[in-house]
Image (cartoon, rainbow, N blue to C red):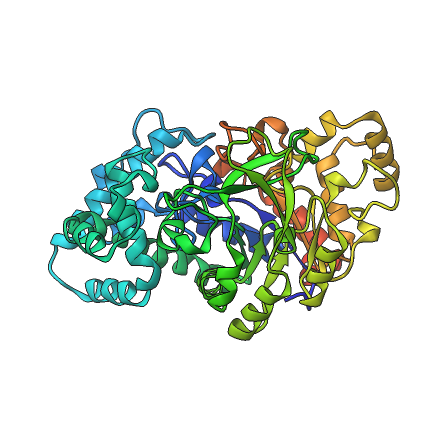
Length: 505
């Protein structure tokens, strides 16, 4: 994976432009791939592409396998003949600069249901046969997911642990009765996943034709209110009623003085081990069928995770609990071969985390926004990077480069101007250049940094309950001048064809 140097852009697909309130897998996504290729960028980090959960976050998804139905291109459904042109008219209130999730969900779900009804009512053709093949091939997770979503949408906000006890406990008779009574709802959710997969595969094929690889994301913990936790209760630390006995988080860190209380149920690793880590193998196998490289979230949690007792209001009073360590990655390697992973090793990193990452040859991460708050020994400085690593100007959790600069301390600014040889007038391009010239194999920047946007355009604030994952770019922001500037940096620092620099013309 790390044999050659490359650079790329971090942008969640919902951030793309488009008329239906949020970005999706349609024409703007294909145009963005073209722009990346013109900019000499060979990586597109898409972040998690699953359904959103609490706080609009794809890291709290109701499924570890399903794609987000909000990413389905409605124009593609019209092209198939399942929506009429007048059904694509945008509603008043849909925004181009931010995602209004309640409005977008209502608008898109209504049209997805209309398209599904049309699909199932039309004369059988090869698409119906393809749908049935998909359902059969993916039944190991798709059946549980479709039933879970059907049940959840009947009682929004009600936890699965509050369903009728036989159904919450997944007694066979209760499952059969629940599925038998909801064929249309189950068919709808399967239709959405089949449609998502067809459109995603089309986008990925286009990216490969343009020389762009997709970098996905594997959240370490599924949400409590998810199909996977409901369907695999023995694999998680739950009591007899389906309530978590402890939850995940991180101790106080750069982002929060009280830590982050994620609330996800923790794994019962002994059960995973006794089953040969089969659930993890299938989870990673499914993702690498969709993307080329996987950033595995919160890698340090596989050495030890921060466990917080249920009922705590912050993550301060937690403790470290040992993870599976090498046993999990040995099993993944035996089943899947070489692991195309990036280890997100930020936060409190101890020697055992470093040893685990190195044992399996996984590249770690450096973030330039963290580089200037100490001294020249900071591991995030470009001269401290290892060749088999990935360097970012910032991640989706950081402020934008300009936002960071505007709030940086006088000491950080002084160090950064000395190190980068700049006055800070274009700090975003200074950081992109520093990342590009580093020895790290991959260099990535959020799209907001390419555009030089301030902190008002930040994508996520860890621990914030609202206002996250809403930022969108406009079609007019994809400028040829920015593409040319990126291409020159990529070329002169060996991250794309040197001829792209046009210095010989």
